Image (cartoon, rainbow, N blue to C red; front, top):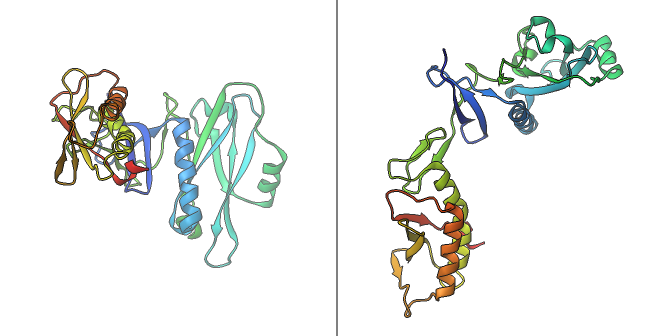
Length: 288
């Protein structure tokens, strides 16, 4: 039996990240997405197709209806073909009563004939039954070459998840970055230095607030060292390679340091951070 994990995947830095489930033992990552995330995947493919052209970008489309909806036809349009300049298009005929059964009769793909376009305008999904959805994956580059397998229907599995791009797209694990600088795959819960993923994300989100507070009195503040045993508190603030004095001779007053400490406490929610103390970089955006 496959051992599925919950993680996030992306393709380079341009596509994703998306929450998913997958079997990490596969040679190629084959993520399965919820309907909500499938909509996000579809939206990003359409954005990329609009930016780079349908001839070099696959698109994903989510069609939704009800279990008792009448059979409907949906026309999906792509970019112009290279030879005749006419817009490429496919027609998807959905038998909603079969979608939940996962059979081949649930949806079929045909040419977008005048009759199919007329049927698509005439009838929309209705009914009051359980919500249903199918996903259509169109490879426009092969569609322009006349391939009869350039478009495919993806039905939900038993968990209601949709396998999109598995074995075809170069999916990789999305990453989270620890405070120590180590890269971790999204499903890895913690770093060897003791910081968990949730803590690292919360602290990086808090960094701009901490930076904004400290820079009211020390405009060059670039990083802080904070103690994690007991209540989190700042123990050092640096401006580049220079450590700033936190005492009476330094630029800070007790109120400012206390306000910064409170932001750290709010981010960590009282949960102790192992392996401290830790450095937190205050990026240039922290001054905004």
